[in-house]
Image 1 (cartoon, rainbow, N blue to C red):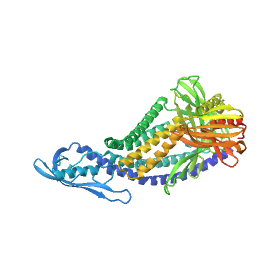
Image 2 (image 1 turned 180 degrees about the vertical axis):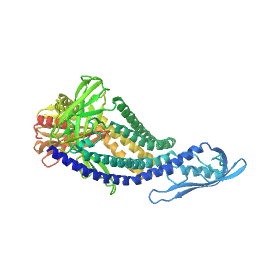
Image 3 (image 1 turned 135 degrees about the horizontal axis):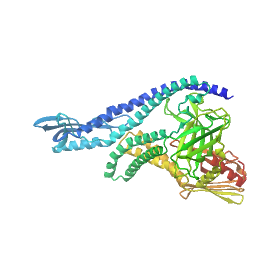
Image 4 (image 1 turned 60 degrees about the horizontal axis):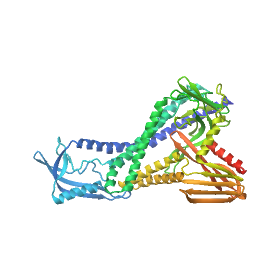
Length: 598
C-alpha cells in the first residue's frame, strides 16, 4: 500500500513539475509589465530627479529679472487637470547676459500638491513688480539655470509608489518564477534517481535537519518596512508642513499615525532579526522520517539559547493545508494565493534539559486518508507544516517548519509521549477560555459574559493597520494624487478601523438555560442588539469558523459557538475562540451545563 502511494506521489510530482514549468513562464511574463513600469519610473523619474537635485545644490545663486511667467492648465479626461509653469528670465554671470527657461527640477505637468500654483504666483508677482528673484546657475556652464531647485518630496513619494509597488511586485515575481524553474528542474532530476522516496528530492528535507521559515519572516518584515517607509515617509514629510501651516489638525494626526505605523513596522523587522540571531539556525529532526499518514509525525528541536527550566511550556500545531490560486475579480489574470485547512492536530511538547540548553520533543498521531506532502491537484499542492511556539510570554519563541508527510504508516521509534494527550493541554485551553469569557452556573444552565477588549492584542493590528492605510489615503488626497489612491487606501483603512473598533469595544452577555436563550450585544455599554429565543425553538449547539488572522508565519483561526434554531437560523453565543480545540471545549461545557444537544 505504501509503495503504491509513493508511486502515485511520484507520478503526481512529475505532472506537477510540468505544470509548474508552464506556470513559472506565465508568472514571469505576467511580471514583465509591472517590472517595466517600476523600473521605468525609477530610471526616468526618480533617479534623474535626485541627480539634478544633488548637483544643483552646488550651483550659485544670482538675481534674475522675470520677463514672463504663466501657469499652464492641461485638461485631462480621467485624472483631472494637471499644471505646469512656463517662465522666461534674464540674468548675468561675469558680465555676460543669459536667458533661462527652466522653472524647476521637474518640468512635466502634474497635479501633486500646489507646487506649480505657488511657483507661478511667485514668478508672476516678480514680473509685475520688477523685483529680481533668485535663480541658481551652474558655475561651470552658466547657460544652465533653474528658478526653483527644491526637491518635491510629495512628487517623489508618488513616484516611489510605482517604483516600490509595481517594480517591487514585478521584480519579485520574476525572481520567484526563475527560482521555481530552477528548483523544479533540480527536483525533477533528483526524482529520476530516488525511486520511491520523493521526499529526498527536496533539498530542504534530504538530510532530515529541516530549517524553519524564520529567515523568510525576517526578509518579509524588512521588505514591508522598507516599502511602507519608501511610500509614507517622503510624502508625509512633504504634507506635514503644509498641514501645520493650515492648522489642519485632523490631517496632522493621520499623517503622524502613518509615520508611527512605519516606525512600528521597523520595530517589527528589528525584533524579528534579533530573535533570529538569538536562537540561531533552529533545526527540526523528524522521527519517523518522513512523517507518516496513518502513523506518527514526531520530531525534536534543540534550543541551545534557551536554558532549561521545569516550567518551560511549548505548544505544537501540525497542519495540512491546500494551497491554491483564486480569481480576485480584478481582471482575467488577477489572482491571489489562498490556503484551505484540510486537517489540524494540536498538543503540548515535552521539554528536556540538554547540555547547551533545552530539547523540545513532540509526537502526534495522524489519521489515514489525508493527502501527502506536495500532492498535486492541477498546478496546486498540499503542504504540511509544524508550528512550535512557547506559551511563556517572556520567551516569545515561535518557529514554523514545512515538513514531509507521506502515507508510509510508520511510527516513532523513540518518542513515546502523545502531545495531544499531554496534561498541559487541558490547562492551556481553560486559560484561553478564561481570557475571553466568564462562565457562571445558574439554575438549569449558564450565564456567559464576554467582556470588552477580549483578544485586544490581536485586534489592535486591525486598528494600527487601518489607521496607517487611512493615513495614506488622506495624505494622497491632501497632496492632490489621482482620486483612485485616496479611495483605495482610505476605503481599506476605514473598513479595518471600523472592524477593529467593533472587535475591541463590544461585549456579549448570554443566558442559556431550560427556559431558552437571551443574548445582549453592547457597544461601549450601549445596547446594540438583543435576542430572546424560547427553549422549544432551539435545535442544537454547534461551532462555526469565524475568520483567520495571518501574523508572520502564524495562521490563527477563530471560531464561535452558536445556537441552531429549528427554522434554520442561528444565534452566536460565544466568539473570539482561538482554535478548534478551545471552541470544542466551550461547546462541550455549554452542552453539558444546559442539556442541549450538540
